[in-house]
Length: 152
Image (cartoon, rainbow, N blue to C red; front, side, top):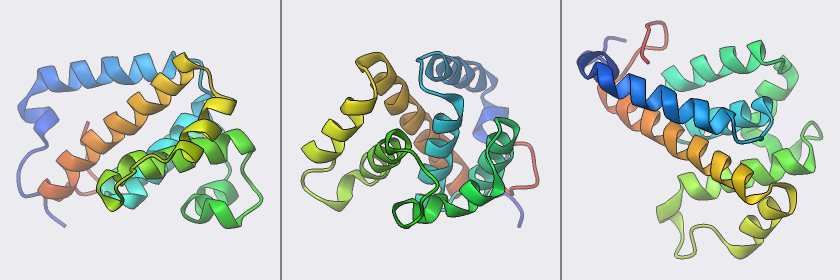
């Protein structure tokens, strides 16, 4: 696959600097790094962002994730490999990524379960990671960013 154009982060270098700052903030929110990596991977799977799925799998492995858990992220509800907190984060990720799929995009039960496991600062970090991942996906998918090239 060939990209339609250079990655926007290359064309707008200040963009990358600001996005990296947002990621640093998310990773400093108190949410376990592996949970944030799972969130990134799941949102990228939903959005069919090959670059981010590939990159997210590699960074999750570097953070200590097992292949077994990484292979199961797409079917997290039906596997025993995730904690209750991780499941709450993944459910929040799915709802916040698929905003247009239902009138109540993030139902109270999804939010309440996430709030049971994460304090407000951590919830903000989760939402930031979900938002930044969706930003990555919305740049990479339209330009057809190949997964074997440097993007961000």
